[in-house]
Length: 303
Image 1 (spheres, one colour):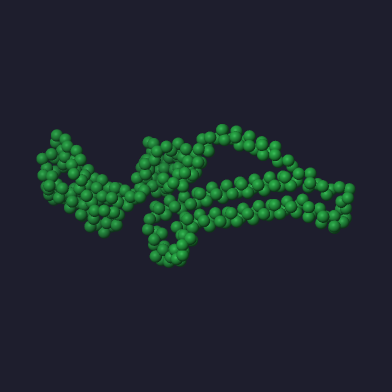
Image 2 (spheres, one colour):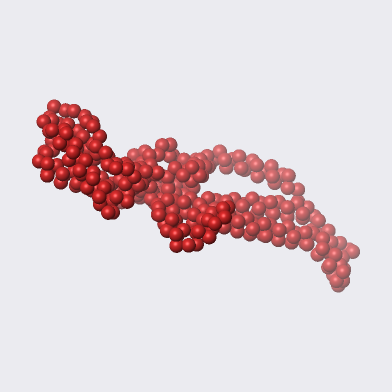
């Protein structure tokens, strides 16, 4: 091998020139390869860390003025305006950053090892062929694991759901507590923590993304004066709209929908309003209470 080429009869262990000649050969090239690999890995990891932290914190570096705005009280208030979106963005960015760091370490480390082996005189062609065969075997044996990771990457990149979202996956409904590359953790209403493999998620219903809708069904006796009933429900909506806390969660005025269904002894009316994500349940509870008060004031009986 080249590494031991200097250990011949011409090498004089007592001569500094011989040691210098030996060191400036293969050992120096090996040292340079390792140093370049370490520096490249540090640079790549530093870039990934910087990028993911800015994405997680919501700061942008590619537009003038936004970086300065992020450091002010106004910028901080804007970043805190939607805590759920902030938590989702932070976890998504840091998870992707972890994957990028691991990938960079694997790729750069493999290249350095192969270059070192080639430098010391080892024939790496059989090694590459063996690695290809092993990779194919592992690919067939770990198809489900690979599918989980690929599905996790697409879930994160497409932002289908995130931490704090209320979702339904198959027969499991609850709040997302963590989204990793292989599994998603969901806490249901009873407190059970479900671990769901990302590769098994075929259909997801997200009830807290973008906007939500609070809906209250009101079933009245068939003999009820509908004009009077609609007026009472409209007043209930105005009562909720006037609430200083709940008003900040409403994205539109409450609406009284027409007759939803008819039965022999009842009529079903509906009150609905669009709200901020994850706030539909609080608004719906307040709307039910307001409907009960207004119906009682108007002496309208429920079916």
